Length: 145
Image (cartoon, rainbow, N blue to C red; front, side):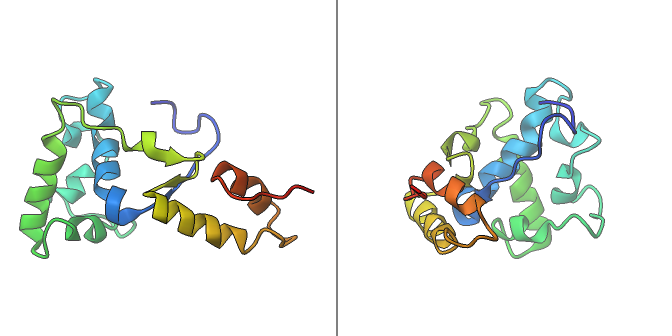
């Protein structure tokens, strides 16, 4: 873990159906793995307390998408989310970020191919020159000239 403003901001495109829960767990357990707190809800800058129902989330924290993967019932979803996250405290859980392709996309090969095709559509667009640089990182054609 680094300082909040250390280095440049990095984002990745995530196949939420296959990786959202693993990423959420990984993020919530970061302070525990770094030995900053014994439990994820003890970290004061975490949104974990909102996911497990310890506090009502502010308007800018949207928990429903993630919780819906556990249950349509709010309390059951919060309980299941807590179990899912905390079951990985002692075993460390897998780092889902090891599967990131080209430092840009996290998903199965079909998802990566879909994103690559979407970017490829804009490869020749002079307004988006970064598309030519991104494609080779995803195994795309890139721009040779």
